[in-house]
Length: 193
Image (cartoon, rainbow, N blue to C red; front, side, top):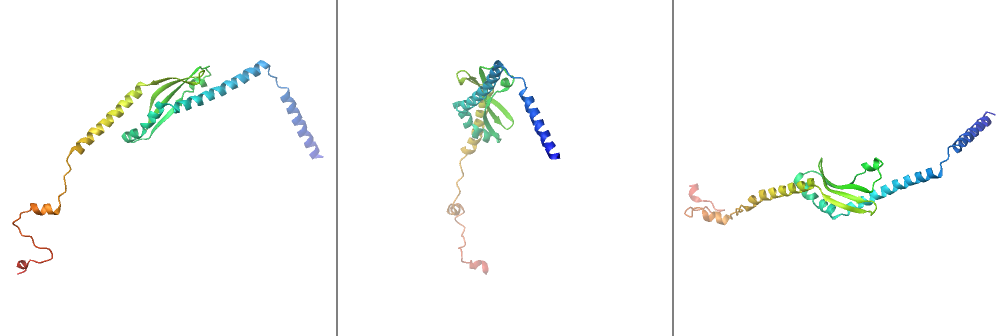
């Protein structure tokens, strides 16, 4: 009898909880529409961020910055990384945005430099503005100066004429021709006596 009563209690408990869930306040049509619109806006924003990031990766400016990586690694002897960044801070604050902001960032070790500032128009679904930053211009100038310094440092060393090694025959000619050289393999008999 104990099992039957336990089974009956479980069934009653499940029936009461399902009845309580059905009694929850029903949403009106307007509230449902608002909820659906908010969800669709979040999905659209995520899609726009993805499209914007892909367009950044396809820019010729991004490719040019990627080509600089080997030179930067040689001069700085640190890890260099070029990344596409989309600013999502305004999105997190819940602002209704018609444009998104992004950038192409260059990380050399712990130093980060924003090379380009980008604006994405959400209505047209394309990048509307690409602007080079003053930091980027300074960074490129420093890189060019470092290359020039290394090139000038290498030129004097390369400008020295290499000293040609002398052959044994030339060494023999430079020695005093009056001196007699003992022949190899034969012993000088004067020295032994």
